[in-house]
Length: 565
Image (cartoon, rainbow, N blue to C red; front, side, top):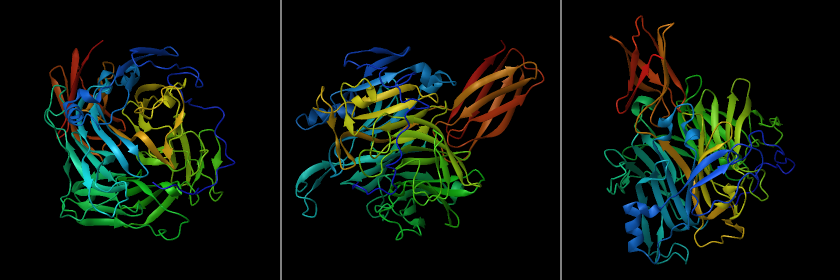
């Protein structure tokens, strides 16, 4: 995480003066709509939207409370964690089941540039703030003379950056130790591990043992199966952040990629996200977020051919921003800079966190979550949605679509304003869910430890955070989601939509069983990847007074009843 020189010059490009989708906490324009939330407040109304406010206590989970009790002199905790929630907004057009399920977050404290991390808690939490599983990250004692002097003979924490769902009950964790990637873990949350009454200490287990040669960066990890790509294994980025490796379960390299431009670009490359997925035309592709080139790169998985770059100095695409500004190929400017977690989300669309930072302050723009449509044939890309955070997050950040159409992500402000009227500036680390119209539906804010409650303070070292931060966030459910089930008596048609329990990257086979009166119809269906909507319809000659709809995969199911109105 060293400071980078700018890869494109955007000094003549001012941030938009009017936001199409404003960076508000609730509907409305501007930043002056909010007020400071008191530590003991339980409710807040902002622009006519009511939010419940909950204090989140990390020590409410026995794993963390036992650690804190045993290390009372050294255990580091935030001064305050607050959760703001409007359930109607997280329900969206799906209903209450959309507000069920969990978030996975890993929060660490320290100087991220030096790797001096003194706390790391990874939690699985319901949207109401109930922590159902938690882990204190591993600590290690360094007794070598190869590390910096401050580290010698001291205990330090590792932390987790990349978080990914392997399946509906398994979280993959990518560990960072002393600013470099280290180990990868699998966290099995099956059985009763997610019951609120569970006190089990479910520890993440290493994916590869010490005898395996598998290693890589902490930025990312993706599981793929033999059925999907011909290999059962994990895609990771190397520690130099300029190569990709696909390791099998034994730690053997089964596929690798070194960019042809590895020695040709001015500066570093810095891969920070990699994804294997089928593109819009059904070709198995690899999409790579290249941070220091401010671009997304695409290659063919089978042949390894490099197909295009989108964004930055070497872009093959014209890119039109939400405000209408068009960045033309060859002009050296880009619509997004130093992005994180850029990911293909199906139908020619990408989601990414645009840090809006080009290596020096002042930043190009406030950091933002972005959705972008990409026309590969005509080499045109268009940013169709944004949510501006209102702060400068110089590195890190996430932006993932949810089944409701809401977006979930993370960010941190380079400067904290504890008493700002914009609540997002007042926390050191924030996780947020926002609606497609720009309203905040859910937000988790982490205050600093022992920091000023009155005065603004900078909390970055070069580009890296100092204090508390999140790298990414994941949402998942324990049951499939069924939306909008209807029975149309005039046409005899039963229709509904279905989503998987997590944002899987490939098609998922399932079975739909629909019973209306005495008649049952069974049909195989395919649940679309990336939490895209999958619609199902079935005709009946005699529907009766009600219908029962159920959908099942090999591991999960859901059902709902429709009654004739």
